[in-house]
Length: 118
Image (tube, rainbow, N blue to C red; front, side, top):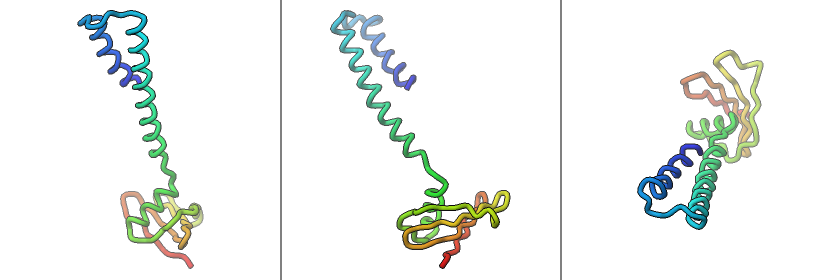
């Protein structure tokens, strides 16, 4: 946000102070302020949407990973970590989808081992 505000202030400074294309007054200052507020609202909304899309849960990442590996997970219902089977650097999850349940074993930098459960 600060970068966007700074990028807006530079042209305003050039137009009003350096190049003196427009005289600074009540009307021109109000218009410049409204344009700046509009720009901040638009870019603020865009960055908020990007931040929300970046909030992925481990469950949704597991579902995406098994889909990439060719397994069907229509709708993710939840995932629970299997603490008995998990080890350091080897997490085991039970992933529940609307159509199936899977045991997913993950190790760093490797494809997941996926076992369909009955």
